[in-house]
Each structure stands twice: as structure tokens, then as C-alpha cells.
Amino acid sequence: MEERLYTVKVPANIELEYDRQNDILYIYFGDERVADEEVLSEDGDIALGFKDGKLVFLEIMRFSDKIGGFIL
Image (cartoon, rainbow, N blue to C red; front, top):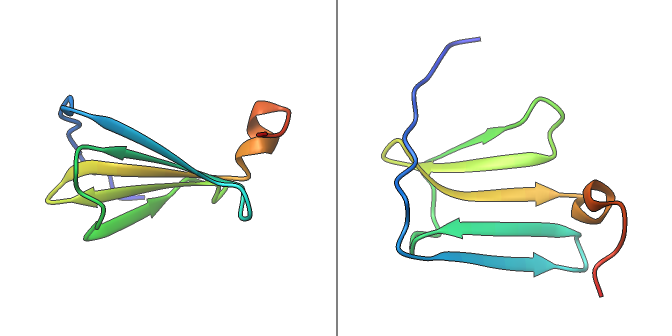
């Protein structure tokens, strides 16, 4: 696998959004919502969105399974 270097700048704001129907937690860093590159974790449960080499969001699939419960 090709090694890549990404940077994470401490954002002015972090926004969380939970999609109950699809059980996905979205974490946005700053105001950007569109990525020009997405990378999946090895298990395919976490997507990292990058724009211009900077992390702009995370998507955590099957979130309730990961926390061992359910979201009300």
C-alpha cells in the first residue's frame, strides 16, 4: 500500500450528525462538506474525506455496533 501524508488542522468548529436510519455518525471538521478524495478503513466501516490533502470529515458506519448499544 502506498504511504501518504495527510494533515489535520485544528478546526474552528466540529459538527456531529447522526443518521439513525443508516446508523452512520458523520463528523465534520470546519465548514467543508465535500471531499476530493475518500479513503476507507481496512474493515470498510470508516470513511475519511480529504480536500486538498486535509481531513474534512469522518463517516463511521454501523456506529451503534461500535459503541455497543443504540442511539435514542
